[in-house]
Length: 347
Image 1: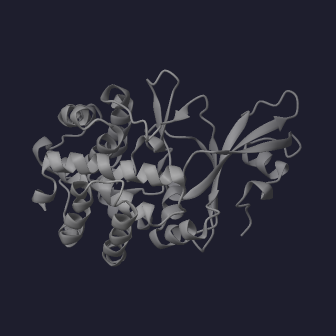
Image 2 (image 1 turned 45 degrees about the vertical axis):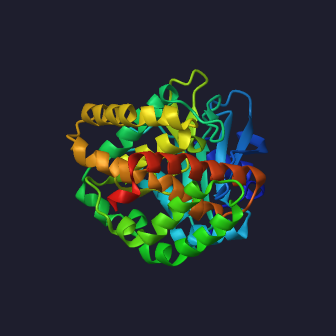
């Protein structure tokens, strides 16, 4: 392996070359932790360039998690492989608003990796706990439509091994056990009605995993505001954290976004259909001819995906106080969405 996988291993001369500069142009850099992600570690490198150098003032370095459990689940599910390949093969060709990648590499063990990305500051990460209303999600809906339209029903989706890997057997083996742990952990935080959604997913797990979507596209897979950067005015956004990149129904991404973001269940219920209709219009603007009726069914079933992710992720990554509350919210909000939309009844 001929690349660094932690900030302390990055040499200024090496980084300068990756940024298109002479090795001696970068005098050094300072390191600060950024983000709240638990699957990998992200750092802002503030760069000290020689006078007159036309280069970024800072970049973001993404590295494997320091937590062994997170690294193990990343290896099992291909998490790091997916994100590296998004930047290696797809990001530049798409029109999706996302960071520019200056360097990407991953070792044969599918764990040791490094990404050097553009720093989009003053854009800031969304706050999952605070939530975000429909008006603030409009740029995200339009960005998602660009992602989904990029390879809508494209036969090449079947030929991308990093998204085509079938984790169905792994999920069937792990999810029921993870759900038991989740139910025990959150028994005092979540109501029985919310906790029982997980039992319903377990009972219908085969049908949930086997279901064919109305249309296939690239999907982000974890499209929530913690994984989106927003401009100070809130009128622009950039999608980040591509570790759950996959193929499936874009309506699933959309339901996940709306279900995990809007804190008030009444406000969310009033937003489901307008958000969906805006996404359909955005797809049409990108040249796609979507079947809205079939995709609405995908959306309704997709409401379960936020709960599913909350169970899987909460029991698989390093535990923190913020993480506990975030995963509780990630389960609670989509569960109410799924109850309102009759999601389990469609399986």
